[in-house]
Image (tube, rainbow, N blue to C red; front, top):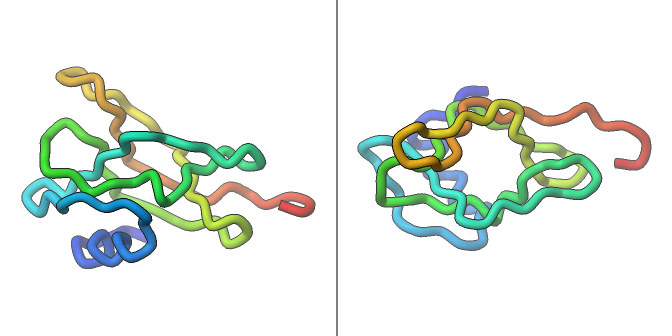
Amino acid sequence: MTLSLSDLLALRNVCDSIAAFHEASSVLKVSTIKFCTACEYIKVSTIKFCTACGYIKVSTIKFCTACGYIKVSTIKFCTACGYIKVSTIKTATIFGNH
């Protein structure tokens, strides 16, 4: 599932804390990254839309239906600013009672 600009804008509805969306570069900022201890998914409420450059970009995203978290499977660091860049986010395989 590839997110379009409208999909990214719709993602704001599930985030607890949202800043302004950077429409020119379609990037996101994560100021505080929190992980689900069961599956290591990133909590959706930690995602914030940003107004600056060098922040993480999300091109593919899927949600875990069990816990509502999203998992970062590919992480790259920006060599210019050191911020995390994410190109792919996928759901993990659900085992047991997760």
